[in-house]
Length: 280
Length: 280
Image 1 (tube, rainbow over the protein chains, first blue to last red):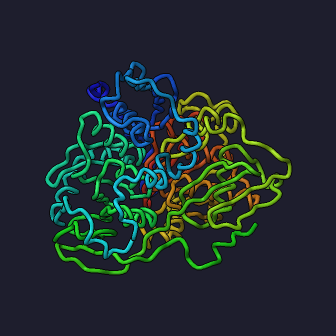
Image 2: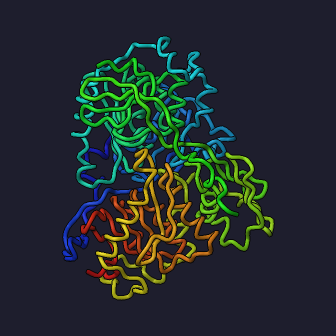
Image 3: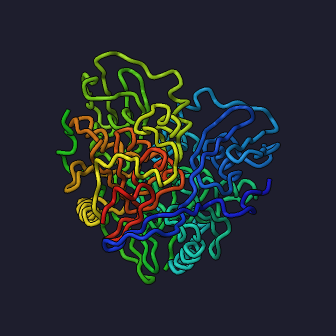
């Protein structure tokens, strides 16, 4: 179940000739763009989805996608992963299972800039909600403070996170996501899709049996409600992004007891929910 | 069929109290985040999709989404638009029609960071392809040069485009898309979703019966293959973005005769396909 393809030559980029224009002058030059390619994910014999993604860590993407969609829960369920074809991944489970009858309907319900569980799905599962139904920030006092971070720890983590993004520096066309503890990046992923990058992280967690509860999710892109839902599914309680959160992400984070940190740039950052977890 | 809601108070943002951290100091302050809210689109009596979007121009979003999905073609087909509820839009067509039996399957096939027609769908329709099946850039000589732009026209358009983005400046959390002629912005939209912003533009085109052929699509976000597919459906031949294109977008643009301009920032820009349309 190793990520075979990442050991091959860099398929994540394509070199091509472009015309650069600068102050009215044209020049033919070499440039690189990020690769976008289709990946069809099968669960046993059923086609689940075709994603347009960056061809790296496809097994993690497939597993993370199935995990986010609630179709697999842990590594033990997986019997085999077939990835003979570049554009297909087949996940075979030990106990045969079919897609829920309403699966495509559920998915349609959630395509915002993507796919993924809706907040209502998440809420119905009752994970991590633990009675935090009042979005009043004074409820801070009741939240689990198992994980806290100082603002300089955040600054250091985001610095390390941004240094890792070689592909972004090459192409300017990808999102990054990472899982860290208080000190270092444990898992790192990049993809042209904001949701794919997060699914890859949780797919790697599943493969490597890393549990999320005491970890921190780092993001380059915006924190929307569906990204929050993916993180909450893994029991994370702190999400830090370079970018903005949406209103629904903040509202749901307040309800679910999750600390959202946005615009984390250098020593500055905005804390949108449960600031008690961020010490100074 | 006016956009009623946009005349009301600014529902696109939510004010909230946050904790700002700067160089280790915490401060409670007011801030705004971009609103993310669900919108369910019905075609006659059938639920088509629920999008997570910015609550502005919802009618345009619904029409643009149905247009992008090939479910409606023009304004004449529309009998009525019901938007009594904030979170629902019902598009009623003069001639009753149902969703294709394979509609949800088709959609699943295309959720990358989204939904939308795949390139293969588009190609099957044969629009704009007009024999440009060889991605060899020397084929430039055969393309339709009805629309050309100078690099300083692009610079001026992108300047005007970025000035319009009040919501981005307020929240840092949205994508913008616009349709322009050589001189000015004709249609402008913002949304938390990159695809939604583009669908809103084409929905407005449909409402206002603006044809795309001689217009230019301006984007704040990346040009992926599905964004290209949406633009090509409207017959556009020039797409300009502040951000990067993906490899598949460049490949398909070369095949479809579309000029892609990326990283358009000030007087600099990269032309990835058919540079003959960009004069200096």
